[in-house]
Length: 376
Image (cartoon, rainbow, N blue to C red; front, side, top):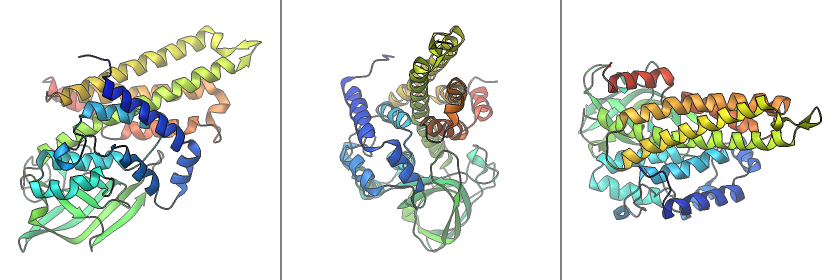
């Protein structure tokens, strides 16, 4: 594996960094988080003009046709900017369609996603479903050639602004069965859908979505009926990988803020960065971030090369979880009281670090995956 970014990735990284610095400062982020929807349409359209939504969409559907590795480069910059938007959930929905959607589904939805005209989200989580999606229990019963959905999903990102929700439902078998799960495309504004906000500390908008006799057509099935679990796992694996890169960006910004602060903060007549204990702490932060970065990019590279990556994704998420927690704690401690001042930018990253740590599998959940992968 070559750890250097290629010319296109360097260009993407620079353009993303420049755009986010100019357009998405902390005042803008605060305004977005305080808004009714937690979403800025003008900013989304500006991002679409940069082709960000179409990075992993094939050229046949008006996308760029790049890879998960390229997408990881972009998401690392999102992490550095502490910027939340419906990008990750839209990517997740797009991946499901790219992998298993019908030609009609792809032709109808993907060009609109690439153009920034359609937002997607993924509804997989339920109460009692702890990252093992074989336990999905929300039912979709066959009726009149289509399906009727009843039940509740939780932690559905940006359901309030989504145009379509890709919902993992049970069309057969019982919770815990590997078979019987199907992915359905649902109109987010369909009759029978009720949204209830779920407060989270990281700023991302999350919702409980209740389905009360919501009807969909058989044409809205993504992939095979009752065979949707492998697709769901594949999508979650890929989006987990790019979120690991975002976690790295979050931690990278924290260490840079900490290095700047400690070099300027004077105590006992000298900058505290000159104290050996502070230097050791910042060095530990640096080592942890580098390890998390290379683990995340190795997983992204393997996926992009079409290689199996379940083990590498689990390792990347374990390392990233530990890194964002340790770096956030060290950054807070080295900043002292300044670190918890709401007027100082560090708090944006600290809150997102905890949110990231729990998303798509905590360390114990990822260790279970790793145990399976290495045959324990």
